[in-house]
Image 1 (cartoon, rainbow, N blue to C red):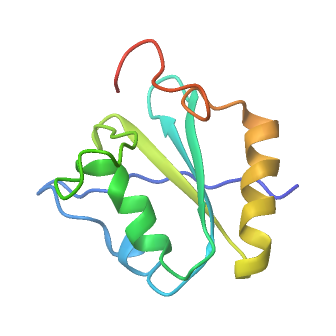
Image 2: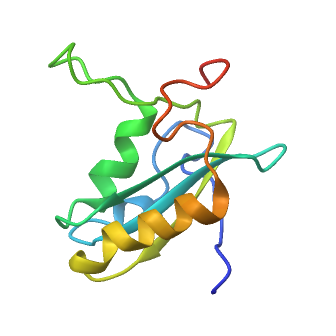
Image 3: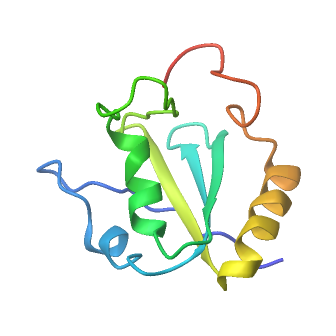
Length: 115
């Protein structure tokens, strides 16, 4: 399996790096991991061409709907890898990554501590 390439998501000014914005209109799976110990924290996917928005949502809280909960991470402490694929392959790519990486925060609520 092709190796994942992890990168930071924000620049020194707290803005998303260009590579994140280049995910617009793309589909695929992504991995969020701890930048220090490289522990896999979360694996997700977008099969609707909204990969940039889907990745970005993990770095700010949703304020529009208290019922919609998602994992939010400190962008200074994590890095992200993305696997671009056709929309119909994104859920399978996500499932394969979950099996391979055993993310802390998938399917079991929050981990021991919010990140």
